[in-house]
Length: 204
Image 1: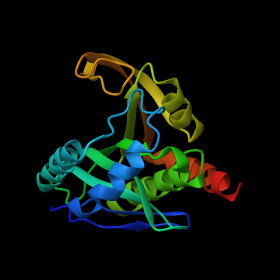
Image 2 (image 1 turned 180 degrees about the horizontal axis):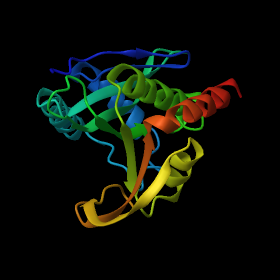
Image 3 (image 1 turned 120 degrees about the horizontal axis):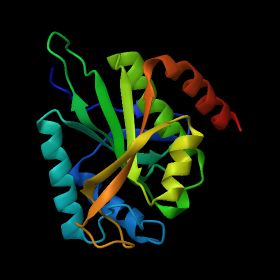
């Protein structure tokens, strides 16, 4: 099955297909304050943003990712990116059986707002209720305590630490050196409880 680009619409934010037309606004969002990107890959030049988008659109063409820009509803401003990645398929099914939610970053002025919570709700709801996946993975650098706490807060369960698993990224590490990954997941039987938790968080 070809994974065509699509949008997911919420109250506080929209997830829209990533395109090069969004590059200037995303660059502005990613360079206002970079202090929270210690373990996160966020392009900081026009050239880097172009290469970043090129790479993600290439993954989309191979049906291994569905990249989104995160757009704040209040001012219609692109404030970050996220994506479905590491899409897995089984023979005989025309929808994925497993996806990972990752590559997520937000401008500093969009952090600690309902945007990230609603984005996770929209992505997880699509994965479990539209695609019927059995499992959603959410992974982060094992040293990224802030990210790990956020994943655990929405109901992600730690499966373990994958040693020497992925390249490091962000200004607190040497880019490209190997990192340990904290691997979390949510499975289909846990989704109703996670959905209720996310909805309650959005209600405040």
